[in-house]
Image (cartoon, rainbow, N blue to C red; front, side, top):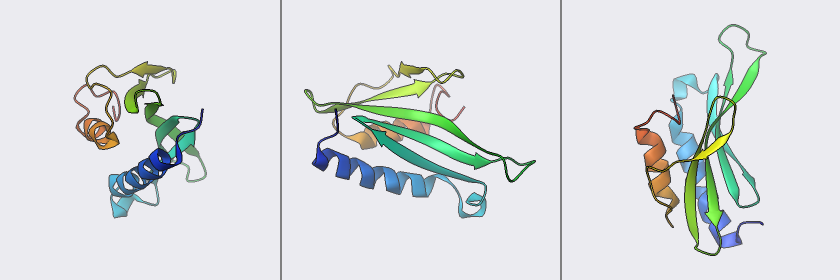
Length: 114
């Protein structure tokens, strides 16, 4: 199911700002943080170039936000090394995606940024 347009627009603005502030300007040629929307899920990922081969690029899944339309809340998920998603239980579902972005920044369990 697709995100409601108002929810999608707000999430896109917040995530675009977040992604722009994630990588220092000095590293922008080698790495960037971006997001993809699919249905009612938004996946945050880091796109980077290899230090050894500039032609080699990879995407690392950082987190996923899942929207529950009935409750109008966002839940946070993390990916294991096999890229299987797991619900992040340290923060409750919330209506404010900023709460989840703050948790990713703090990363107390080191599951998002390693």
